[in-house]
Length: 134
Image: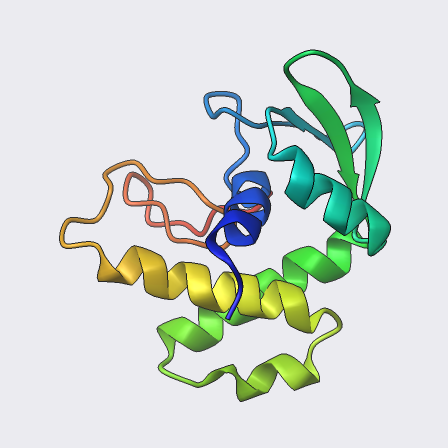
């Protein structure tokens, strides 16, 4: 099980839009926002992310192996939606990202009322019925 603070960091990256607390720049593939420094530092040390810029307030980070992370996160969401278990994580390029997506899907599914207009990578948008891709 992934801790809430860790899941919040990576989910905030998957939720990044122009209107969210975390912004994503398609040109540079960088994320900008206010992040939990302890979690960021831990994942920098593990090589999952890189700190591009740190100022008082927002920081800019880069998600290493972003394509693998996105596809594995999507696989986790998909398998959770299909009712599969987390054993499929072993078959992904990034088992950690799979688990984040898997657990996040279950956290969202627990809510009594789905959040209207919710946007997150590989979740179906209720306004268009399309899956949001980042």
